[in-house]
Length: 261
Length: 109
Image (cartoon, rainbow over all chains, first blue to last red; front, side):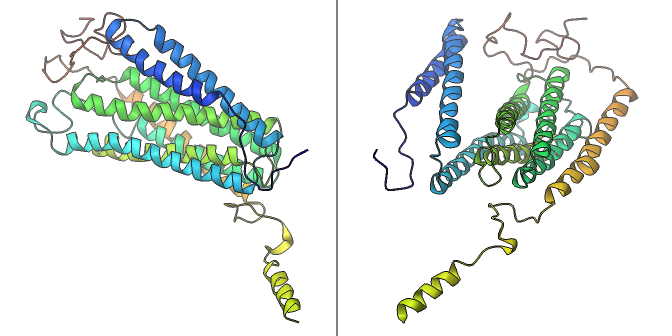
């Protein structure tokens, strides 16, 4: 039996990068077909293949790491770098939307009345549901830290409880935002105010759903004994992502909800 | 003799363990029992904070369902450069007939 003489992970050939790339092509061209040719087929196909790719690729990573032992310390270090770099790219993504918001709101054009919020726009009261949303996400940051320390201290029950609290708070935030979107007197089509508001908060909400899903997977894995007290990088990555989502919300709250009202 | 000194030195360098010898992974520089602290923070600070905020929203909602503003056909609002790709193309995704007027006015007037 041959052994490798190094601690790195030589990953076996996998079809998922290809299916992922193809799904991205289907999604982008599908969006164009939906917008311009009244056909939703390509988009749905793209979304399905995208979800299947994610499920199978990450399932394989869990198999390679948790069951086959390929995630040595140096491999884990690489995964840490990877997650950090990804989160940095997401920060830059949101920076674009914040740039757009400040560009439009610092120098409001005459078409808007020369002031911000523009004429005819009644912004949401930052001290009502948006403040509750802030409390919910901050609380979830505390509970995810409780979860992490519980994992470190080998406390299985507390780790599970803490993850459930965190995920519930994430779901509560999402429900509150959906309700806010429905009750809002302004829509995405209401001048650049609506555009910047719904693009920024919309993408944020999407990331909350992603983060909640990631944490849910961690809960499933914790239930199945995947995590040990000194090797649980999947959980750490989810917790880092969740804190990032929380910080983006704080910027949204201060910039768009509070300063922009 | 030099070899002995080197091996003694490297053994010294290898002795840098945390007290008690329990390996601590990165980010865990809290002492034992810090999970208990975070649990306490969750149930005595964070969740009550959420509760107070919920109460605040509930009270503010009771205070008054405000009159919806009159419809003014501002050209910078209710923009329809191209139809929405769903329904009749004239309603936003979270359209609420009571508070969202169409470009031609409220639907339920």
